[in-house]
Image 1 (tube, rainbow, N blue to C red):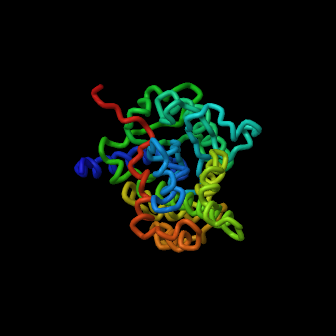
Image 2: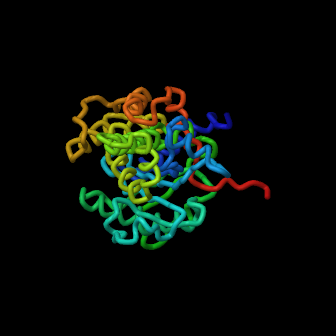
Image 3: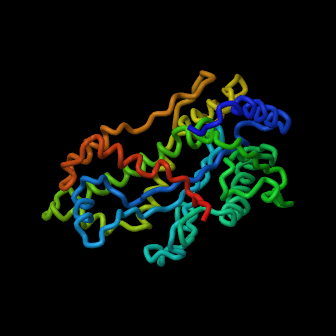
Length: 329
């Protein structure tokens, strides 16, 4: 309800003028956003959740991480996720080379994004990856990162440095994230639903042919760790189609003939979708809630879940912005 609709049209005009002035293509325009993920949570009516509630001193189990997602407007360059967890060196990752992970893992006491972590990500992950991508496509080393004005983001002047020359940052107006920020127009939700489908897939495999169906879900819930979550999150992000990312930009940038050509080129350069001849991307398709309910109905210990329970599970971390909300205290 606090969304500011009045300044949206002015910013869309400012963005178009900036892209034209800097002579950028949509391949060079990026958006990033943080979100929290309750990576171990299951629907509240599953056997594991019900058993947890009977434990003395019960407290809602919400093991969370913060995820930073970033991609360009054509959808053909999705940067590797950055994940912030509570443990600096999780035991589940002790035998793994950090470079072998499908995403960048960082440790922070509260698993929040802050200005220092964002600065490090911008300098060591975003800028090098964008430069590499642009060189491979023989594009000028110029780029734009759109992001919201969250308190965990340094101001654009702080992000400037000699090594980052040509890569600029632009803040969206305050209170417009829900209206025009691309990652908030279904991309992050699409990723989370795919993550939870991966979680159910693992649970189904654990349940198949078990000799003790009553304890299968509980054993699975206890056994799953941050390493499993890392690989499932990376797989979910890889499965988000380029058309979903392109469609998320429709409220912010008007697609024209030049845009259509850029999207067609992106499709021909390795997108998982078929090339399109229209000047508008396809609408965003999210895995339906009914699919989750159908999968849960086949798992021992999940039989009491209904459509409301599944909907609450899917949306339980939708309001987690990935950074700490400070109060007066």
